[in-house]
Length: 459
Image 1 (cartoon, rainbow, N blue to C red):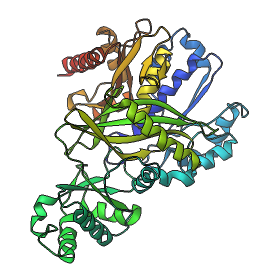
Image 2: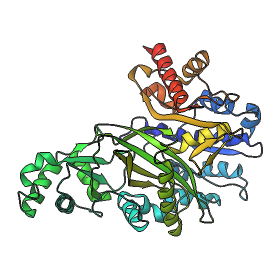
Image 3: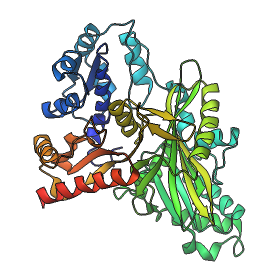
Image 4: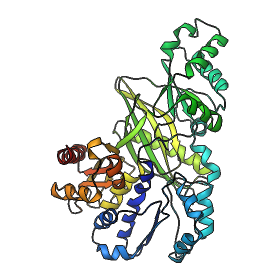
């Protein structure tokens, strides 16, 4: 995660949970590493339809560790027993529960210390959401996925597995090397097989191929501009890695499906998205569009439900998502599952914004989201609206631009932009937003208007 610019502000994704304060009987306790700018908190409270911000403010408790180090937030909390006691005093233990971005033994320890339930995947099951664990689940529930290897923990083992994959699939052009635990595609690297034509399966022995791949791995194409082979190879030994066939295609998309596993083990499909990817080879998550294309979103739902049912059988809980690659062949889209995320990901908070701002619901009959009046809703969302000339904009400056340009979310019309990662703007020129419209075209137009307004004010 350290490779992602402004990553310490990603805690702010979950500020959308403040919209739960629209229920006048709910309270929220939000803990962050650093104090939040008052304008950011005010912004979310003003989004609440029909609730005076003062009433919501009385039901909100904000805490900060005042620690900007790279250590996990929960570790910072656990190291501050007085802070834990302050949090405990705000809790109603019989009615409270804890949510987090990602569940580890640290979160379990904090939940036990506070004596409240942790609504997240048990840390003992996190391996199900790794690259190797995802492949095992896909095999179990018969969901199509690319050919690849099992987990390898040394560069030599990985080179052998890569050679074997190439021998099974001699027509491959590229092979993806994936660290077992990655984030937004940052743990991926590409091995270009055209540069190894001299040791192709029909031209060299297995041993020669392994030796050539060993040399070539030091020159793989990383998806992160900050990555080096020295660091990546060290992480192979620490985390393990897999080799996987790169799916080619002239017309290719990256859809995903999001689901929820209840404490009773029931599986609910929450949403589908078409992800917006970037980076050198289109493997870095930049944003998403809701819903996924009607040509395959019901198929996504069905596959996502099968994955969720296997996860539920293993004891998983709460939100999960499954990422796919869709390749168009004539009039048909072929889907291949890529990975499972057992955490709140980049598609969690945009859908949370849609749901809480419009008070509507998702229909798994057609994969659409409808308001209570039956109006379908669409959005275009991003965590990565980033430009150098946005640097220096303060949260208050953003509020001024939003209001002057009338880009704020209008609760009466049910359209407009909802912003997040606002604390990231001044230092990194980076912003997140969810643009909600009554049609895909309207959502895209709102997004373009936001970009144009920010460009005008900062260029």
